[in-house]
Amino acid sequence: MRVDIISIFPEYFAPLDVSLMGKARERGILDIRLHQLRDWTHDVHKTVDDTPYGGGPGMVMKPEVWGEAVDAVIASGRSAPDADSRALPRMVVPTPSGRPFTQEVALEYAKEPWLLFAPARYEGIDSRVVAEYGSRLRADEVSIGDYVLAGGEAAVLVIVEAVGRLLPGVLGNARSVADDSFAPGAMANLLEGPVYTKPPVWRGHEVPEVLLSGHHGRIARWRRDQALRRTLEKRPELIDRLGREDLDKHDRRV
Ligand code: 6GU
Image (cartoon, rainbow, N blue to C red; front, side):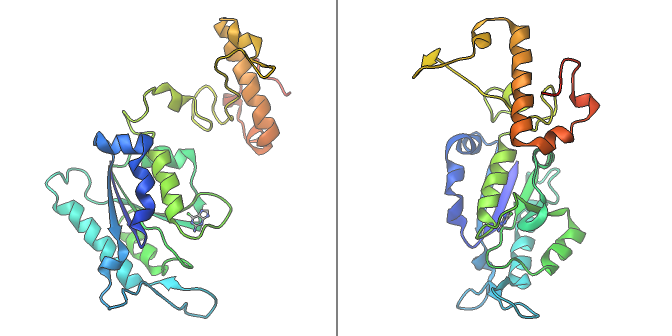
């Protein structure tokens, strides 16, 4: 997967050199290309923002600079010899006023050959930029949660990591993706329950004996009960949303 990120802080993305994402890049599974937005300004001050029409606090990122930057990145992909199916990227604009970024969206993005991220600072990007690219390619405004960050860069790190770990060959054990909280499948729409490793007793805390029993059926049932219990306690709205198909005949209201 190719990932382009245009930002006034390309150095913000240094963590993508580390750990799982770093390995994915070394292996060529993830091709991340960072771009300095200011490279597409034309004034000596490399201005990327201006005051908002209609007044109000803060600054808004100028559409011309973003337009030139995004056009250039799109053009760089199309002229590449390996252009294959990546005629146009899926564009992702992080903003607290976007649609929620969920595991479902991560799975959808993981199927794309090319993502282009446009994280903003200040009060956001002039809205005509998403209007323009929304008509030329698929452009999504997404939020990573109900709180406000100082800029979209941290959201891009979150999204790239959530998507990157889903790419074939990135995780050692592919099964761990299927068992994720929020992943479709056996534990669909439930939080994962507690996990333990050796020693069997630590500071007086014992590992639940069922996990030491070797009885796979009992273990699976216990894990599902723990997942149901934890979900009910921490995310009751997820329990309310479970459909018949998410429940098995041994699930009961705890
Ligand atoms: Cl995507 N950006 C910013 N600036 N704040 C956020 C966010 C994104 N998602 C939640 N809060």
